[in-house]
Length: 148
Image 1: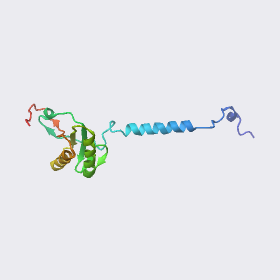
Image 2: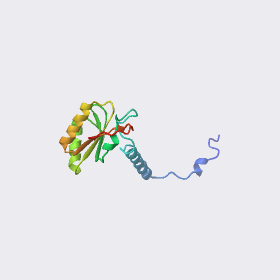
Image 3: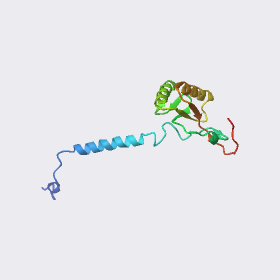
Image 4: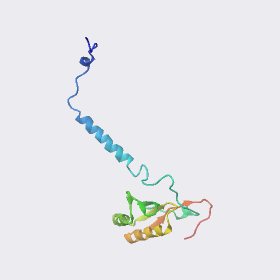
């Protein structure tokens, strides 16, 4: 009885002896994939789809260039280079203020974050050495401006 009538196995090329290069290529691609898609430039970490900035008339008039940005999606949770609490944020702000001349901080806080939390973060940033602290807001587009 013939179990392999076409004898296809004998017509295949021999198996390669070493697959080390293919393993290294796969590992490199996996590291590249996680490096690119885990980057803070692809999607801001921790910001959900329901994140909204507060609205204020004349918000564009107070726009300025900043050196550092933190996001506050809810009270007690801060994102800069990852999720942090207030103690970790204090250490991060101190390290960043020492590495940048005249640092300016932008706080992107959700509309539901209490003002007390924003003032606490601003006080921590000023104590860490930040020259200026700016809170982000959407312009309502009414055409009125707020004088400082």
